Image 1: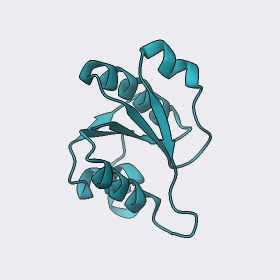
Image 2: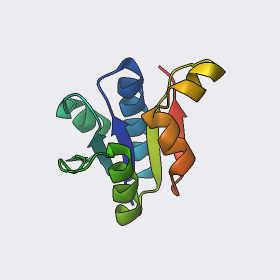
Image 3: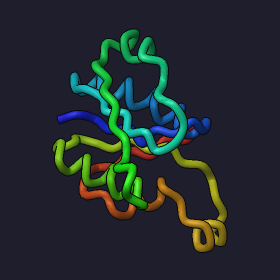
Image 4: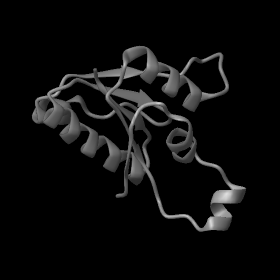
Amino acid sequence: MPVIVAGTSTPEGKAAHRFALQEAARRNEDLVYFVLDGDRPDSALAAAAGVTETYAEPDARGRDAVGDLLDHAERLGASAIVVGVRHRSPVGKLLLGSAAQQIILEANTPVISVKP
């Protein structure tokens, strides 16, 4: 059962990746970096943490990258999903949905939210 991280190139995404590496090492599990936006991270980070890291991407034909991430987590039987979050006002949450919020609300797998 791997740990999955919602990969983005934002500071929140980078913090989530660092935490996911630590969590995967602690659980003695592999890490799946699901690329939501940006590039893949440097593989040296995973090697330094002693974690096997693989990569997955959303279906290029689809419109719902977060849905693809959640489906992938279910298929793999992921032990946790790690996602980076930032502070937003209640009005901001109401008007502007986020990938992190969708993952937290819709996942059937435990979600670990990380702030930078």
